[in-house]
Length: 110
Image 1 (spheres, one colour):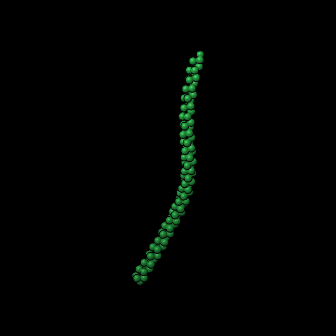
Image 2 (cartoon, rainbow, N blue to C red):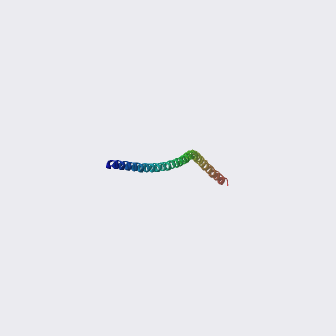
Image 3 (cartoon, helix red, strand yellow):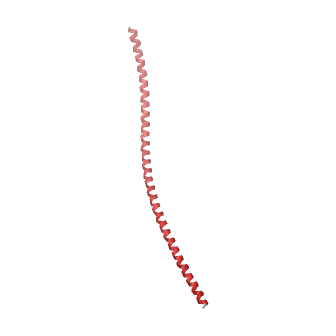
């Protein structure tokens, strides 16, 4: 009789242990699935933000290229203007010399 009672006790204890373990692992699985969903949503949001910043970066790089081209054009214009300015200065000096020469002639005539 004791043997049957011991076997029944062991079987009932094993069944209770197994039922508790099933519920425990089921709860862990639910938590894992919930955590997995949160991680997937977070990764999706991160991908959207990365794409957004990538587009902004590409636009900025395009703008930098445009600004670099404009800067190079302006540098070329500045070189041209400096050359013209120095040419005009030389012509201005020649004209001032000519004016002084003419003033000297006018004074000589007076």
